[in-house]
Each structure stands twice: as structure tokens, then as C-alpha cells.
Length: 414
Image 1 (cartoon, rainbow, N blue to C red):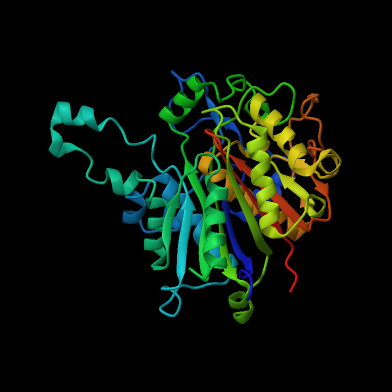
Image 2 (image 1 turned 180 degrees about the vertical axis):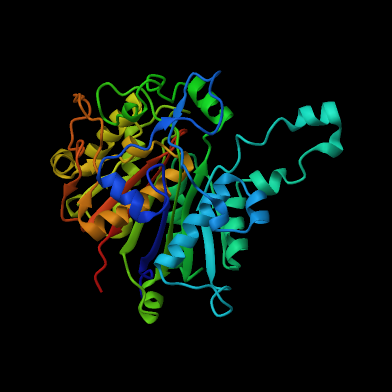
């Protein structure tokens, strides 16, 4: 009996606060460039937190017509852009020969913070004056639905939300679908755009966002540094075209990496505080899924949010999953130090970066790392990118609420 089908990555698309495509984002990440700045998209006068990682100069009409763009939430616009980039990267054109075979699996919270006070509209202007496009513009399901509609593809179409683990979760679900024969090719990843007045306000009141970066935004995100005070909210989209190895070989596709495994767990401990044992389970399960051991891992793309609890918990989780010796051997970094935390979008963005580390044998740095924390005592690739032979990458995403996901990317060998 044959085992699961091999799944490979043949295309990637990326939009981040440091670039509108894969190569510009990657160049700036390796340079240690911060994309965190004062918020420009809305007035922050009443906000405690005035900084974020915004994607600037994005023009959705480069990727979709004016009417479609106007009826789409920003999260969906970003999803379409990253998906089209991934298809271009993979040298895939959609036509009648393949449109029924290609599916879309995307992680997003949608326009959860942009629904507006429609009850107030009903009370003051009448029920007939509510926004008729509210659901079709801001519903989270429209991340995948809009991509499917713009591209005209008819394969499986789903949106995943499991808090900050969503992007990795969506990719893992897509992996399982292809391995098990449900689909042969899927666009999978994440897109998020929750840098809104309500999003910034509620996460600020919760205490998750740093309130100390308004005067020096580019130094505000400091994963694993002893002086870290919270994460920086951001926008982001990362999409990957996943195919069976057989299909990719048949069409002579550029194979960027193999996607051999993913793992999940749930803390079942607290609504906000992370649990190291739960996080370790996701890493262990991802490695087991991929048929690998801790000593096989070349690099860990950390969740690394820059909160006191998360970074300490993730460090402890890596030690549990890898053992003390291997945990100290493997380099780890958090690109959230440069682009902030895009919530549901983070896992998709970081999966693309995982593929790029394999392609170029380069590790992005954790910038703003200046004050070592005794409880975060591993190799976090501080401040400067590092040349490093990369064969296997483990990428972590841990959600507010206890959802944990890890995935494995590895160099492709026939």
C-alpha cells in the first residue's frame, strides 16, 4: 500500500509592510529593514497605540477590476494579489483545462473589525438602509471566495480561522487534502488586514500591543529581548501554490520546496496565556508527520511575537520538543521584529519566508535584539541575516486562545 502523496511548493506570493511582492519583501527582511511606523490610514488621536505594520502603496486595481475591488474587503484584495503572484511564480495560467482542478484554502479573520455599527443605522435610518454588501464584503469566507471568483477556479474553497495559528492551520489542511487525494493543486496561505481603529483599540486595551513604541516605531517589536513589551499589529498576505509531486513534474514546474508535514495542538489552559507543553506538541507532531527528527531541522521560524509570555513560552516549548542540546544548536528567528504580527495572516507570510530560506540558504534576523533574557537563551539570529545551509525548516504559529500549529518545509529531492 502506497503512502501519502508528496506535496511540493511551486509558486509563492507575498505582500508585507516591507514589500509589495516576494523579492522586495525578502530583500528588506534580509537587510533587517523595519516596516513598522506611525499609522497613516486613520486618525489615531484617541488611540493609545499609534503604530502598526501597514502595507503602503498597495493598489488593488493592479490585480482586479475596479468594481470587484470596491466590493472587496482589504483582506480579500491582499489575498487576490498574493494568489496571482503565486500563480505567476509557478508559471500557471488559468483556463478551461485546469480551472475545475484548482482550489483555494485561505486563513483570515476577514473584516471582523470593519462591520460598522449597523444596529445604529437601523435605529436612526431604518432597516432598509443597512449596507447590503456587509457580508459579501467583510465576511471572513470572502478571502477564499474572492480569490476563487477572480481567478475563476472551481476546486475546494474554504477559509480557516484559528486565531494567530490560522495561516499555518490553512496550509496544514491543504497539505492533508492533497496527500489524501481530495485535490491535486491548491492555492493555500493567509491574508489579514485588521489594522483598523477597532482592531488597534481592542488589542491595546487587552494589553497585547506594545504601548511604548509611538516615539520610536521601528524599535517597538523586540522578540526575545528582555525589554519586550508587546506585539505590533500588522497587515500581511502570503500564498503558496501546492501541487502533487507528480503533477509538478509532468508540467515541468519550478519546485521550490517540499511540504512534508504539519502538526496541531490545543493548550486547553487559558484564554490568553500560552502553554509551553501544548506548543511543544504541535512541533513534535509536525516533525512526526514529516518523518523527521529534531536533529534534522536546520532553522526554526519562530512565532516570536515580542510579548513577555509568548517568547518565554515558545523558548521553553522548543526545549521540550527538541531537547536542550538540539534547541541550543538550531538557529531561530522572528521576522515579526521587522513586519509586526498580522494575526491570521502570519502563518502564510512566514511559510513563504521558510521557502525562501531554503532557496537562498539565508536566515532573516531578529532585529532589535539588544538585551538578552535569561529565560530566552537560544540562538535568535540577532540583528543581522546569516548565511546558513538550510535543508529543513520548522515554522510555528500559536494562537491567542491556545490553538497551535507548526509546519515543515524541506529542500526538494527527487
